[in-house]
Length: 326
Image 1 (spheres, rainbow, N blue to C red):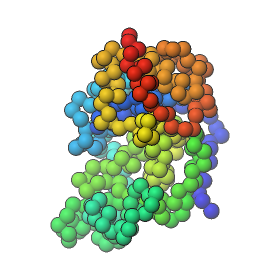
Image 2 (image 1 turned 135 degrees about the vertical axis):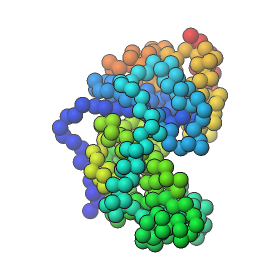
Image 3 (image 1 turned 180 degrees about the horizontal axis):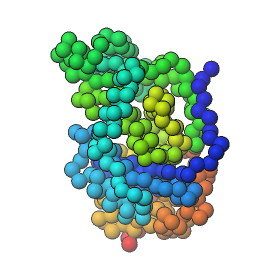
């Protein structure tokens, strides 16, 4: 029987969060997702917190954090309390790693991504992530032994239990995943000893008392991994709401390298942010004027009106937004 995450019956104060990563410029797809997260929490009279997820050091762009905050403020979004900068809370994250190690829930791993790809005997159609086959499981007694024996840096993998996890997503509905069978043991600390995204998001959501996570449905596959870590660390499960992405006319999701669609460039070109807000609201099935502030949408915001299909950003739509001057 799959383990089931039951919906809480007792109301609790809603705490949402915006968590941009400063690895590139925010684009129109980010704008829509962050607006939906803000609308969902604020429409329930909840708090909205800000977190900068900047642990991926080599990919963090100089000035990216400030640009993200400026872009979101330009859209008319606000948040409660100070900004949590993830890289400044590494003691908290390493403490969670140490807790997992002390529980015997991890093991050292010296395998690189190239090693794991080479272990795959043949590509599997439809599989976007290579499963880790457990090569280093029970091979070494400690990080030090692994590194001494191989001459390679070692990370730490979480020992994923067998069996399915069933989650009730607030938008996508029931989602079942056997993480061990589909993904295998996953990293909680990379080979450079930096805590992984999966671990950091779990620890920081708990540290900020986040109760509702609204994010793109490209992260739905990560959620069962985070559920496992929350259970292992005895942390609460938030309500997850995964919303459809914005895609281009070929069906590909927007990427941070698409600078011509970045909020920064639109802002600098004099685009009216109220036009972007109105586009995001309309694409989400909300009643809106031709130009609106985020607060204008709140009184009638209804998440259930959100279409389940991706939003296609056409050339005509892009040109209309660009020509909507302040």
